[in-house]
Length: 235
Length: 359
Image (cartoon, one colour):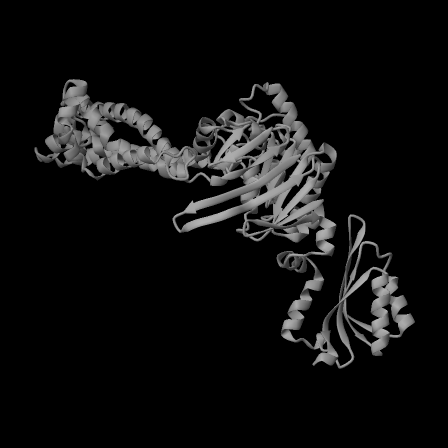
């Protein structure tokens, strides 16, 4: 195995410390920004569905506001957002560089996309189910948790998968603020120093991660369509 | 008991205002099956959704079971003069079960969890919930499907689960919004039979919305006919069927009765309804009091006229004869006249549809 790697990617071996450091930086950015974006995006997505026209708790002004914010941030290319947010990042986390400095822009880059996706997933829940739950006396919170979120699980898993994969893409750009990661490793040590094997390995690593994420997402989505994840059998 | 007074409701849509309810009042006896029939857009669905405040009417008042009087002003409900809280509305809804055309079960929940839905988070213990769900499943005849998901059930079975779910919290009233419209004839029949049984066994008041006269005929005691948001006719099912007044009611009944085909035959000027001079195309309708069909043969024999039957239909509604026949009367003019006189004395009304001498 080692001999094989040495033969096919000699430069990677030379820079393996940097490579592993880059991988861990990417992983760190991914889960930290991902977790925050997951929570905020989910909350905003639910909010949009609930307060939209014909929603269960209409509020036109707030809807307009959130909707506009989502649209604005979605239309800014991430690399520009990264620079644009530097003053804000500095104010919030104290620094605009390194992994710490990349989390906030990553969250800003992911949340609008994820919010929209969550909104679409929840909007797919049949109106009739909402009406039936209302007829059984469920209030707003009951409708959100017991109907919207519960019934939309397969779709939520799919959109979360798509968002996670796109977040990996965004982390590769975080090198621009010195956060490191696989993206900047591929550029600095692969492209700029003319080591094509390093670029190739980065591509392969990202491909494998993406593939695994997508398969997991598809699998869990299928596993939860028209059924719960676990079924308790009773006799 | 359900008492509804002067309900009005208008939807403000982009395309303009749509008035779904115009001064609708009705009274539904406790323990009865009350049908509301109308074409789509007649407002019947809005009416039934107003009863559990899924839709809040613009104005009017109503009393649903033991709710106390709910008054509606500016599209807001007031209970005994005070604005109704969300909690009060929830409590009202919990006391009213509802079933739907498309069942509206949670696809990711088992039959058990679907039926348990109204019981969870109400302080009912897990054990009580389990007992109640099993009881309900036995009632709707699906005890073996407790751990199955809705996607594995047929339409009729899904509606049974929906009925069990609607009954879980022991409501006194069950609203049925086109509950059989998406089912095949067999399933429709079995669901209607189940509703009838529930009404008899549990004494639950059922309000059933439909566009099919056959459904009304099968289970309702009284029926209201709606058109363009108005209640155009209301009465016992037998009275409405035997003597419909509003044109739309006649249309509905024609759609449910084989005798309704006569309109098509006459419009097409079919050879079946051609009458020669001296002949009459008549519709004979048997009244409630009419003892039996043999008055017809008696009349024919006694007055010496012939009846050539074109269409005939007899059935029994709540034990009373309903229906009649359409046929061509021929014979001496005065014999026919006397015959018709005799029939009317014996509770058979004659309506002349076409007079051969008039052409």
